[in-house]
Length: 503
Ligand code: NAD
Image 1: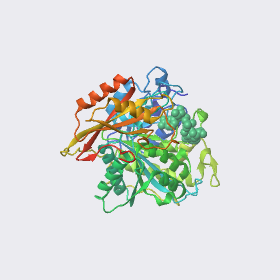
Image 2 (image 1 turned 90 degrees about the vertical axis):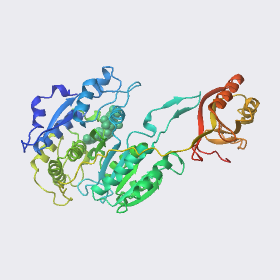
Image 3 (image 1 turned 135 degrees about the horizontal axis):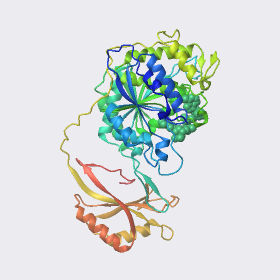
Image 4 (image 1 turned 120 degrees about the horizontal axis):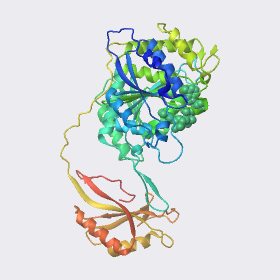
């Protein structure tokens, strides 16, 4: 592996070359990454310099070497300081060492820097890159900070583990507004939201509701909502029907790889992670250890990320020159082996591919649509003003108590009998579910029963916290193992919890 520190200064200084010297250089942090990272980053910095990008790169060390020094996040203090200074990171892929204890560097960066919008353009370059969907040209906007990626997981019983899905109003508003603004700015006509609100009525339901509310403020744009499963299937088979897609974190993670693969090659796609005060740009592929040190990797994904970065920092002219030269290179059949096909005329390695792009700077593609530079384009980095909180009537009405219990035949009626023996009239047992399926007072004998039970207690109206504490105190006397509680609230009279069957 080439160590970033061992790269000659001249290569970094190359990236500072400026065609228009009087204009200031933009400081950026650069991470050379692991595996193929150093070789594709070196190629990309050469292309940036040749295209006239006005950059002052600061090299930071992140990834495998940092992990192996015992830093579990993969990023040290000096790197954070550079990121705080520059607010922009161009990052090559890194290798996460196998084994426990290592945190995902990407998740750490996204959350710590508040990079709430993940932007992934996925388009076909037919006929120059083989694809089944030559008309495909879509952009996926993935919420980047919330959802199941909160990383809050618990083992609760012998048999059951849990992962908490957290979705906030603000998180939904930020990404949904970003999607509509992005569509407007880029001349797109339609925004499609994908969620699973037929099942997750509260979390995904919030996302869908926010999408409808904010979408109504953009009458010039078409909008639609689809369930994520059929939406993903359609992206795989009819990607040309989509334009801008906005979705929650996990769905977006999966969908964007599907889309990149369908477009032709994972090696061609770049992505931007945008926050209010910082942004990170990277290829979507990993560090490809199988190709490291062979000079065969395609630098295009990282180049696409660099083009997104140039737009973001207001250097759209260099971005346009670079993108058009890259399209010319594809058209001329100068390909790395991952995109080899009928149109390939010269098979090249990483460095020669960069040379070919540099030779074509100033040219426009003949067949693929050329990119137009629009000087008025402003970088899209939306701040969010939290609206003043409207008054809301929040009332405690009961509690769900979760138990680990596996006595006898795991007959829910037996558990209900114990709980009813200690309950008082102000908070009574109404329902028991097992993995969300009602097993008491109604239920089917066929339902499989894990050792994890949710027992719902409701009052006659408003309930006080001390009543819940008293209930738990009395349950404790039975020797049952209560593993957690979730309080049940109404908000302006609407239940703030999912209702069980028969409720
Ligand atoms: P990968 O993307 O590195 O490789 C998948 C396949 O695609 C391999 O066959 C590889 O040779 C090929 N490939 C990837 N990039 C290519 C390129 N630029 N040119 C040509 N071929 C290319 O995925 P993986 O093998 O699952 O992961 C390898 C390592 O990368 C792991 O340690 C993983 O954690 C890490 N990773 C890092 C990031 C990141 O830093 N953003 C993202 C994904 C994976």
